[in-house]
Image 1 (cartoon, rainbow, N blue to C red):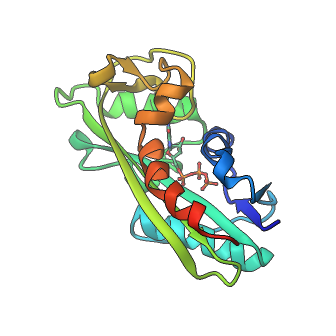
Image 2: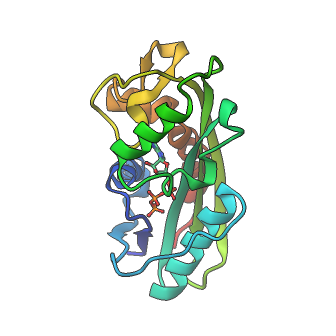
Length: 194
Ligand code: ITT
């Protein structure tokens, strides 16, 4: 059975990626987690470039197929920040949210979007699939909800009148940036026989 390395160190992301990859049509793949000591520097200029870089380097290092996600939050009033630097914005999820709320304190325009790029690399490091998904929303002035991870408690989706952290996991799974990226990726992954 071919092995697919899930190339992330973020536990919240991992949980969501695993949920998409448990599709019965993918039962021919054995999912394995990237070893913690294998860390890839994110030097790309776009989410897609970083997703490809992480998938390719992990695949090559282990000689197995690998899937990676690069994602982040882009806020209009901050000229797209934290964007590619969403993980590096502060040390913990709580501190990242606190910094975001401080920087947006006086802003009337609260519009933001999450982007998720996903890439699958072959064991030789070449890229087999790459997709991207976006979800638009607004940054609240305080947190709401306790589900999800990362910036979820301040990311409000007007269409559903709740934050990502208030959504049942199945709803976030369907409407999120990651959900959209995986909806595009899964049919292609199902065609590959490893
Ligand atoms: P890996 O590179 O190991 O996968 P990472 O946390 O460094 O983990 P990224 O560089 O892609 O991942 O950074 C993504 C950042 O955006 C990180 O701070 C997340 O908390 C945040 N983020 C991504 N998707 C999110 C989501 O669905 N909900 C809330 N925050 C999210």
